[in-house]
Length: 353
Image 1 (cartoon, rainbow, N blue to C red):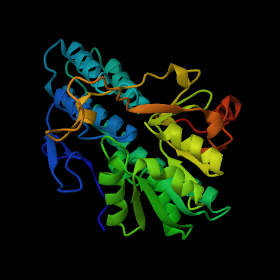
Image 2: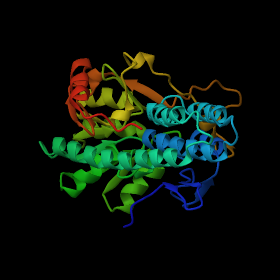
Image 3: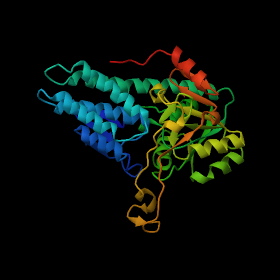
Image 4: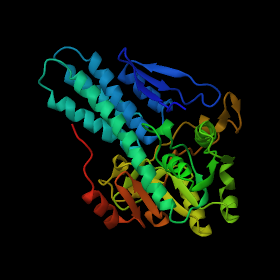
């Protein structure tokens, strides 16, 4: 099967995104030709998943450079980067990628024209590096699973090729573990209200003929209580200095349930997801979205008109509920501030412009 490529730079110097809002009923692509369009695609969930958001934003900077002409091109670039930064507040990969692209802009600030080629090569490198990181994480996570061959595992939201530069983070571990004969089945939670588990994760696994059972979110504790789950494997949108993890809403509840029922918890994310400037999860900005995502299914109202709605996209799981954090550099078991710092201090730095 051809590899899934939800983000593609085209020969006509535009960006093509697989519009994930329509999956699994149909596969449609959206052509992006400006930084504003890239930012809107991120906000509207055309593309989602922390690594994929960062990659898309990097290409958005390239599109801005193509259109920034005249002596004031640095100011136009700064405005475009600010617009992209405002598209989603929680996923740190977005800001990591934009920081890298901004550094290139600053290096060429006194040039006559925006450094389109340098920015394009950096964006391509971010995408290539993310795929390499996902493959490495897949092996590290599978090595951890190999210690006890868990049988069935559970995952939440979507962390596969659709959410990354390819292969996936948590779903990448699952893919690699399946190829190595370490797991027998994946239990995918539906992941309300956008149903990324139902629409995307179940679709990706079915495409690769990996056995998957889709479950209503609130059935997770039932499955764990029956002893049917060996590991809960999830991704992350931001990991703070003490090992706290922001991930899709519902992850905290799953981690609490897992601890009660003796299910181990693995978080899988590249080092670009680590935000050592934040001491703990209490410092992470949590995005909330439109009430209509809860009050309506399409055009049909499913809640009383005018009711108060709480629709956070993420929650924070304390490090104490996590058995292992897997990144491309290795595994941090029983993560805390010291173990996290030790691994990152010994790891080779990611490439910079």
